[in-house]
Image (cartoon, rainbow, N blue to C red):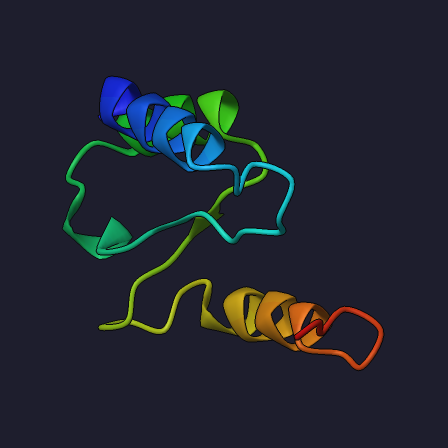
Length: 77
């Protein structure tokens, strides 16, 4: 999973969107049976959000981050 996430970041940067604000979120954290796996992912990706749409975990933080990105000073056309 770590390699996939790093590859995604590389592709975004190659396409010239590396300077744009992005939200990185790992969904379905409720399905991860070993808490140590999530701990390692959080350590590798400290700026990412870890969410579960099913349980609602992390959703408030995601909505807050989306709100920040959509604030009038951040929106460009």
